[in-house]
Image 1 (spheres, rainbow, N blue to C red):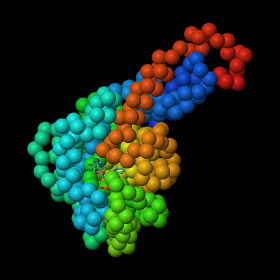
Image 2 (tube, rainbow, N blue to C red):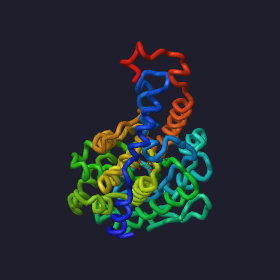
Image 3 (cartoon, rainbow, N blue to C red):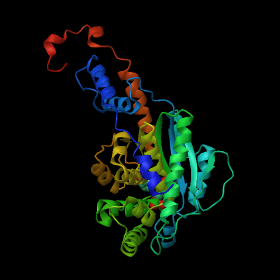
Image 4 (cartoon, helix red, strand yellow):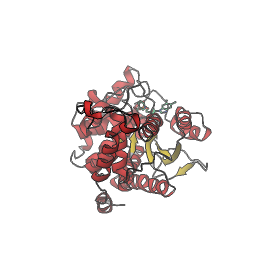
Length: 358
Ligand SMILES: Cc1cc2ncn([C@H]3O[C@H](COP(=O)(O)O)[C@@H](O)[C@H]3O)c2cc1C
Ligand SMILES: O=C(O)c1cccnc1
């Protein structure tokens, strides 16, 4: 995929279907409750109707796409964790033992593991080999990726998502595994939001003071040396981003193009959402924020896009972990709102309560 074909793909994304959203809203307003009283649960159903183009919304089946890749910037000590852990955890997703595995099983949701650039080889049927290269370059010295590599990783995200859509998945989530990716996410956020580096850089998986200092310095150097063009999200992504983030950009874009909502996990998934939003603001209509990560940069990204998190559990795991929790909320919203009685069913004379019932 090149810039032109990506642009042509993005141009096919349609806005949410207003008619279906109005129908859903009208239906919800007729239920035995004050108008809007189920708040964001109602908003979720309206958004799903808009995405699907019908009030007959489906919340099953669900899948979180987990983009796994390594980051060359680990060479300058930006994570307290050794880089090899990327490969270990990527493999562990196949063993069912990670936090993400358990959360997803509980939510009856699937995971789809993609090796978009891990610095190790796997031969496991559950790890989809879409390796662009064996990790990015160290952005503190040279650009993390070429533009072509970044575009290829976006294509991987698009193609994997389209395969999952063909399999019948209705709801998508975004996950990642890549030691050092809170540094790349902070670099992207600092560049695209034109924010101070320390305001968007956190302790990631648990940085000590020296590691935190290395993170800030690596980002400072990368932005100074490569001078990414702020108005060009692909340039920013290629120079200071990661293959995992690029892959997730493809997930947001492809899901939106096919009328499917995408749940955003934590800071890294949010950095990818920011790139997708900058490339195609229309993708926002299909995004659902799950939780607010402990990483400070996430709140700024969501504010910028104009999305609100649905919960704050002080989580900072990544892997897609916020998605299955939000999936549960979607199921609950659908079960409740599409199963409730109308005010007629409830025998309520609404003429006395016109101010709360429409
Ligand atoms: C055992 C382990 C499992 C993880 N699962 C997700 N992450 C999370 O931490 C990493 C980012 O943090 P940093 O930028 O500090 O390296 C990513 O892989 C992210 O998914 C993990 C981190 C560790 C150590
Ligand atoms: O919010 C996240 O996604 C996150 C935070 C810390 C470490 N890994 C991921």
